[in-house]
Image 1 (cartoon, rainbow, N blue to C red):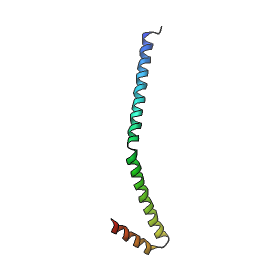
Image 2 (cartoon, rainbow, N blue to C red; image 1 turned 180 degrees about the horizontal axis):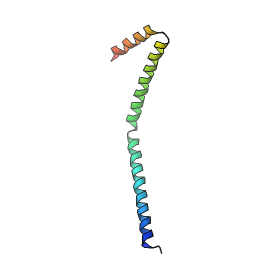
Image 3 (tube, one colour; image 1 turned 180 degrees about the vertical axis):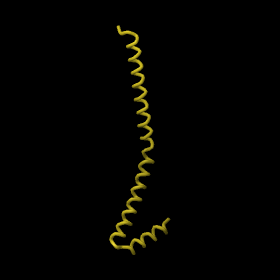
Image 4 (tube, helix red, strand yellow; image 1 turned 30 degrees about the vertical axis):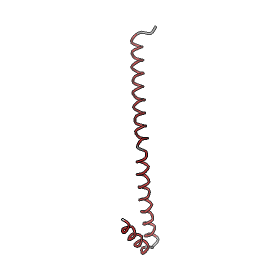
Length: 78
């Protein structure tokens, strides 16, 4: 048979591992639960980036008049 110290050490190690695994699962599931808001935020950010790149393209291509019309339309829609 094993000595009591070895059994106690193994038990403490097993409990520690259980706590770490449980904490990892809690963190993972909390992140998973908030995925919808994360996806929605990412979509909004990408839409903003798309508009910024379109504006930059208008300016760089010399389409300042087109940019101004687009900008005015954007202001009117908000």
